[in-house]
Length: 196
Ligand code: FES
Image (cartoon, helix red, strand yellow):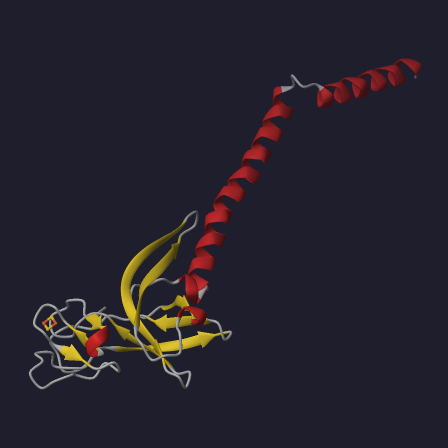
């Protein structure tokens, strides 16, 4: 009886020793496999979460056309009715990086009444960039001399452009930031046909 009890104690001791033995390969493999499962899970989940954020957040869907983009502060636009040119910078966010790139430009104008308007700088005739000529108070296209009034309407009947400058949707957010729904339109048509 005593001998049997001694054998049981010895067996138990050996089992406990194996469980705490760092050289025990079976135990090492168990922990290594467990760690690789956890790390693999983390590596797999992070891109999925980041991708979901990109897909679900509308402001992160940065298509070149039709995206609402912050263009300027309202402070940068004096209420004098004079158009001012601003670049349109698109922000692209993928799983790991955030980058910016210019995708166009707009003329913003704030009237003394506080109305803010936006025009795409691209001439609807054939796609050149128009300039605002301060002393003539109009836009002039340097390519074929189309002219446009400050509100974008065709300036004179001889202008080859078939339509006015392309107006864009504007929103002043929080009373301080000017956001524009930026869009390019096909040149050479009397109607505004969005580029895709
Ligand atoms: S591209 Fe502007 S007038 Fe021709």
